[in-house]
Length: 248
Image (cartoon, rainbow, N blue to C red):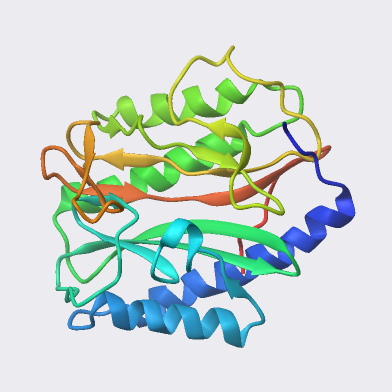
């Protein structure tokens, strides 16, 4: 069942989203070669709690950390640990928060130092695909407008669009209906209505779209070992257009 939110409820969700946006801004300032992904996760957890939020991912279906931190060919759900972030890595950081029972969810991929041009292009093109999809998050459109726009933006540049993982509705739960694929036809899916809040999150690979899950049961990697990028925002459909809730 799709749960629409009132204007007041969207404002409450904005508080959870703002903390996530602030957290990702902080990550952009702090991430550096030589730190471990566990050290970065500790910074994120401390920042969230210091700003009145509960780390939404910690313990979610048993996930052991406060953020998903995925390096290079890791697409999503990377578990922070002893891995050292190195010059030339790209690092995807996915953060969720809970404030007063409402969820916020956002992700960015960071280039650490100098990375190959093809990798930096991947990051920017994935961000642009997200923003193109958000622009279609308008009352009266079908959900497929978002999905097909993201797919077209990415595949027109030769990237692989991950199919096995999708975005989602969000509210008092991390994952609500509807699912938000990053591929499909513009005429598919439910009609978008004022009050729908969704997390749009393209996961775009430099090579094949195929992925696999590692033995830890969480970390999803590209099947061909090529790098992947992940950008995400929590977005409310309003009478005045899309409203991005996960900005600082």
